[in-house]
Image (cartoon, rainbow, N blue to C red):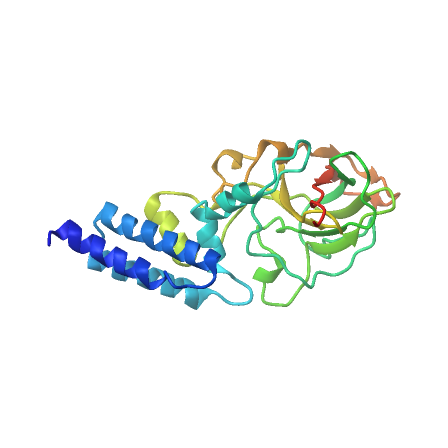
Length: 290
């Protein structure tokens, strides 16, 4: 048996071990994974030392992952797998808001905020008034749509990265009867993804940077509509062209208006000046059940 035949025999034996899998989707996924994983090892002629280093890397990623940090999501993000999965699953519906990566910093227990309320809750940064409308692709407003928003402060940290259990730069609100939404936060700032672990070591070894351009996260849900996970990015940010997680899309880049000190749209006084962003969120209807 030649070396090539011996290698193929290993692959064939592993593929055969999944042949009796009763779940057809699991069988398809696992056999395809085996084919591609084995093809990768043959393509690069993987050494035993490199294989051991890879196992050690994944072990470190597991050890550093906890309820506040998900290193495997970071790894998926920097390899572009997260954005590829988004691209595969995003419906091609004209006019719909584009989706992008979820990221590792979502929290399902965000505080409820009234329309026009402040999600900053003490987060450092220049006040920013964010407003828009949630509607469907036919232009109809979606009343009551649930909107989760979260972002880093001006120092580049999310609340969950602090150790004092704060909840800041994060909130959940419902669109009004006209689909409108509005809230106060802080102007998004660029920041590095966590790079003090194995993913950071990978970026350093590859000569890549850890920076993400300034952005604000949205997750929008409404009955009968596909959940939208997206960001809005600040126009002019120097990292728009080199996002460490490849999440930027042109349609998600927005202009920021800067305002002098004085009265804001909700009548509040902003003595230090403020900013504003307007962005509509357009959801795709789920197909009717058969």
